[in-house]
Amino acid sequence: MGQREQWGTRFGFIMAAVGSAVGLGNIWRFPYMAADNGGGIFFLCYLFALLTAGIPIMILEFGIGHKFRGGAPLTLARMNRKWEWLGWWQILVCFFIAVYYVVVIAWALSYVGFSFTQAWGDAPKDFFFGQYLKLTGGPFELGGLNTQILVPLLLVWSVAFISIYAGVKAGIERVAKILIPVLFFMVVFITVRGITLPGAAAGLNFLFEPDFSRLLDYNVWTAAYGQIFFDLSILLCYYDYLCQLFAQGF
Image 1: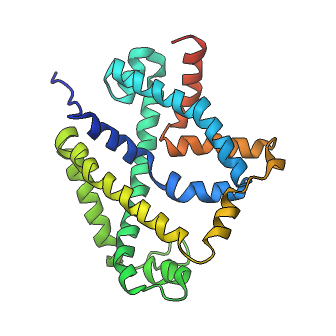
Image 2: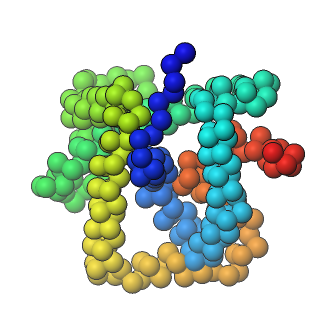
């Protein structure tokens, strides 16, 4: 049996980990979750959840991976044979995440082109669902071949396949070293652009002004802890098992 391929550099691993964590859960989900759950008070609950659940569980996951050096099914099987099914469940979850993330990335790639002419005009919702997605009346009503989605989708799938096929060092690590810094500068640019637009102060106040009356609202705490799992890519299928490991002093 050949030796498992390892990360070439610590920086490459960190960039790949950041790429796994920074996604829709951070860029899209966090702002509206904060706005719907008390603004600043949600952020304080989120920080508490990060310290009490997010960071400890993430360190535990990294520690388990470093110790057993295998895929999820093999790792859990080495820990306890009866928990192997949890590893296969993780594989299934990752599959569905990969499938829909690739589609969303293809949409974003299309909108890079649309942004030069602002093709969506004054009705972005109608443009997205009508002219771009060309939604039909139901799931069993198939439309024609939509090339403006198919082409970027094939491109994104090709990049994903090549990155994985090339291996950890030559593929995933190399791509992460390039794309994650690019993503960082894009987020910085979008943030600077956003806070300089008219009404930005009102938007920030709406997002971060704490509503202390909701401090004891369990929905806010549930949302904060749930957001941690989205942000750090900690899979829910591990949660109960990891809690048992803590209880047993693993």
